[in-house]
Length: 195
Image (tube, rainbow, N blue to C red):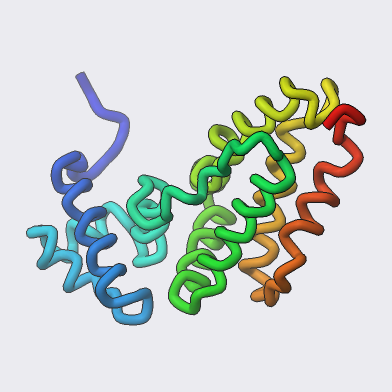
């Protein structure tokens, strides 16, 4: 059986080791002091192995984010029965995390990687919950009458993730009332009179 790609086949054990080492190094040193040399040493691989699989430090960190190794679990929206409160709390959590200096650089790297690669873009959307946790929360809200039966859930989800991306790339400051206003703008016209 022939493989359709050239070069060394990526070892899954080495890949996991590299991603875990990257996450640990990032947590200990932050973005500015994250070095491929340190990651390679911690993972027990050569720098060339890392560069063969990831063309840049940003790509490596983006994969860590996409694998769930750097983002907190709190990026999953809660389900308290109040959609707007849950989405406002979720958006606030994401903004607070993204506003921290090291995390802001990390998020911008992730956005840059997503802009270069369609598959990474889809994974970024997934990492922020747009096609899983966030989508499930919106479906629950629709089933309970918090959103109209014909509310465009995917577009609402995409708009919320788009707000996060725009916030990150413009380095906007976050006023305390901003997440609630954004959630209202995105869900307001789709709210059921019963909700």
